[in-house]
Image 1: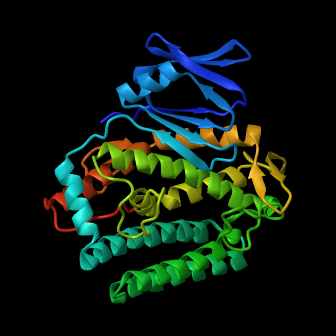
Image 2 (image 1 turned 90 degrees about the horizontal axis):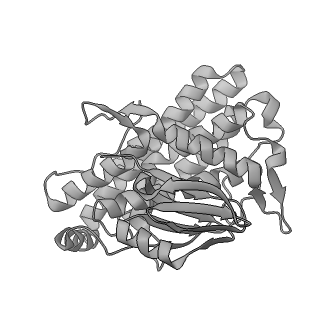
Length: 342
């Protein structure tokens, strides 16, 4: 399994087109970048980027995803080639998603992975906290997540499960402010999670990185031959990649750690954001590029997967988990085991 690169095109008015077996990026008719297609897994375009039709055809033929996001990272569209994977696997997925007991079990494991990994973020933060008051707030949040984990087996239906997850998420986000170091805390505070639109800088950062993570999880789902639209935890809605959102839950800790690191290391500052009419806060130009570079670098870091005997880049872990999910849907294994960070 190879970790192919994701090319992020962020410069406004860029034009990307095909040049033999190479993707060329031009800005005002000046070549800025050439990338051999065989090095790419996905091309992600932000905002006003033009894509030539021959390049679209080539990407589709080569199995390279083309994702269109608006200037702030919100998903707009995705170009896909012929659907890959075994149709029997997708039939099994659709059938089992309609089995309430089976779906509840998968959803419970997805949430358990999320809560356990987010709790690790808090436990690590409590150990590293310099102020006793911060350590107490973070430890209390970790204890709340432990209680939520203990309550998961008693959830008898999907709505109860989602209610537990929602309350645990509220407790988790209420502790995040204490993980931000004092110099940056005045500029980066959150009053709960706000999404559409984000109402503060940390929510803007979280939403941006979550959108990157979501696209990676969707690519992993499709690479495993699964239908990204049919999930077990998230309610099916037109245009929503429910299964990709299910898979993403156990990896949210990765985005949260990255955001906290960028803030605490002053790699992102208050001047990297703008506030629009109505109170929406958005990550802008150079700050966005800094986040993309850091995100790609983190994906290249090696980890040891609990079920594998060798190290692999973190960016491949969603692909491993999507294949584990496929094995469970085929009946090769009895349960889905989420990725648990150490």
